[in-house]
Length: 337
Image: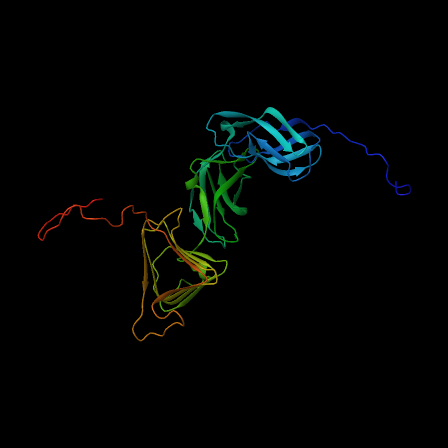
C-alpha cells in the first residue's frame, strides 16, 4: 500500500506446475513443427527448457500458461516414434507422456542439392531435389539467410541465395507448410558452403579474377577459397582475412613473388581435423636483382601476426633404418619398417 507501507508478514504463494496438452501431436522427423504447450506455472526465465524425446525444443514464446517451441529433428529411422514432451525449470519439471509422434509418412526429405557452394554476396541458383515438398508455400533457408524460391514442385525446388555475413557451411533447411522441416537423406549432399571462390569474378567486385603481376589484398572479414591455379602475382597480402586451399581440387598451385600474412590473417592448407590429401603447391618467383621486402627479403612468405597452417596426409613412417647392408649393384634394399 503506497500510503501505509509494506506488510509486516510474508505470504508464501504456491503455484502448481502443470502441463495439460501439447499440440499438434505429430510432425516431421526433420523437425520444424511449431508445438503449443498449455498448462500453468511455466517460468518465463531463460533457464526454462522444453524437450521432445530428450532433445531440446527451440522456445519461441512463453507465458505462465503457454509455451510455443519448434520441434527438433530426430535421427530415428522407424516409421513412427512416440516421444515424451517435458518442461524443465528451476521450480521443477513436468512431463506429458507420448505427447508427440514423429511420423515418416508425413516427413519430407532432401536427397541432394546443387551446387553446394556459392558466394557470400548471394545470387546462386540452388536446385534442391527430394520428396514430399508442397506445390507452393515452401520456405528455404541456409544458415539463417532466406533462399528466394524460383520454382517449386513436390520433388524439386529451385531458389536464389541471399547475402550472408561471412563464410559458413550449413545444412539447407526446407520448411514445408503444415509438415515441418525436410529430413536430410545424406547431409553431405545437402550442406551448402557460403564461400567466396578465387575463380569467381564476383569475389573481386565483378571486375574479373586476379591477373599476372597484380597486387592482391585479402582483408579482415574475407574468407576466399583458392579453387584454381593462380598466375604469378606480384604481391599477395593476406591482411586479417583468410585464404584456404580447396580440399576438393585435385591440384592447386599458388604463385607469387611475395606473400605476406599479417594482422591476424591466415593462409591455410588443410587442418588438423581434416588434413589436405591432394596436391598443393606454393611457388615463389624472383631473381637476384629483386627488390627486397623490409625485414623479410625476396621470394618469401612473410608471417607477421598471422598464421600459415599446412596439414597434409598423415604418413606413419617418414624415415627408417636399413635392416641389412645394401651393397653396390643390389637392386633391392631391406628396411626395418
